[in-house]
Length: 325
Ligand code: C2E
Ligand code: MG
Ligand code: MG
Image (tube, rainbow, N blue to C red; front, side, top):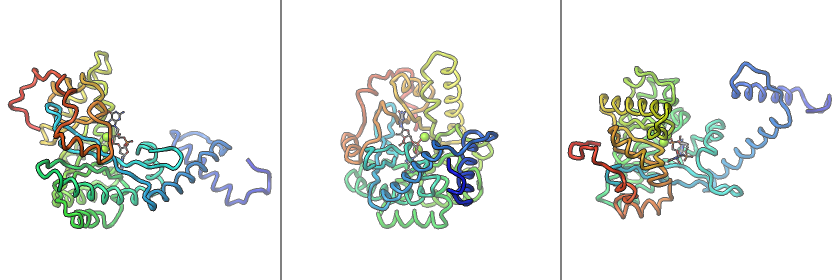
């Protein structure tokens, strides 16, 4: 990488550090050399960090909303707020393309504050326009958000300033948010609930949460991860496993009185299977991709989404009369 005498000892230690983190990220227990490729990766990451910081400060973030519907009727029950970055050269980026950098650099807390206040601002507008549609806005929070000492006060302030009641909002967390400090996080979640907010456990089944952990966690909803949902309509062995997992999570939800929402619905055969298994709420590209607020407003005006898709799903196997969400 460098000729003797070209680099300071401090530089070398920094590079060694980068190589160590790369080794850890690649599964530990291996040697990684700090080479040109790794240097490029580090440079890329620093550039992304700088640009993301600027985007947060200068208004380069957007919020898109993905509707969650009653799978029997298409009625919009909620909308998940998903952050987007209007990148100056790469176009509009989905969260999956930059949220890890935001988390690793600590920028995610600033990003999280922007998302929360923007979601409240938008909800206040919808609340005025669609008084008879009490749908919920779901907001994702990262583990890092829970490190903020004033998180609950911040949330309270946003609700007050935008004049939105807590029961129109839901916080989505993953099992990773709870892992390190379950008791402290549970207390924060309880304070959210006392403000009226719902708590959803996102990507359920993909983390490390134990059943004891779940029992002690103040949550209202489980979100079935799309990695299970996607396969449930297949006839192969994988499909059978996915169906078994999805069904057991649905039964767990029923037993613990938790709502269950399916994510990643991409075909009507998946909707059909979910209805058969007893899951009536879901979101996914088949129903609608995440869209700007104005497009969601159109769906709200209609009252329901993708009615034609949902109508094509046979609901005869479902006892519509006694279904409860
Ligand atoms: P998530 O909360 O599980 O969100 C669902 C992700 O799946 C979203 O990706 C959404 O666009 C995508 N998706 C929805 N339906 C389908 C489908 O039918 N098929 C497929 N293949 N994908 C689907 P996105 O927006 O890139 O977000 C990725 C993750 O980034 C989110 O996963 C969430 O963990 C995180 N995230 C997104 N927005 C925020 C935010 O505002 N704050 C924080 N802290 N995290 C966020
Ligand atoms: Mg989510
Ligand atoms: Mg998810």
